Image (tube, rainbow, N blue to C red):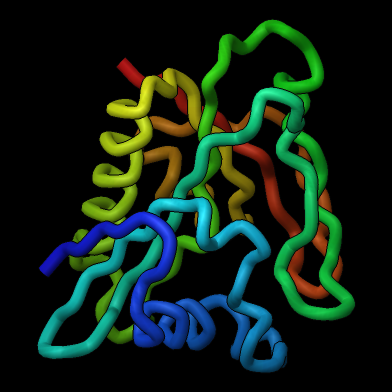
Length: 171
């Protein structure tokens, strides 16, 4: 079952986010939380009574280039800006997808696609026309299959690994 909420999803959502995105990197519990989680839309899928896939989206503020901290905890890595937002080439509002993840035992069953589609639709309903995200290199083929394109060269987010920024124009 697909769920979406603004602000505060259940603890089971954060636990899945931790298990998929942070625990494999040796990070501590709490590193899955972001400073602006209460200002974002969160989508998740429950399957057989367990949260198995998660993702979130937020509108990037008018004065932001998308750069910031990777998480709310101490020693958070820095996330670079999205190049197109440093210029006025991209009309606002724009949105950012973050913290997408699916438990390995249920990958390739379409859960991530459903979450991404729901988040894109929600952002479109809020007036956003363009989305941005930072993808781990292994996730790039998935996002490309969903219509996202790479907009820069690979870069390293310390403690997380290599990434590329991606962008998608909504209809």
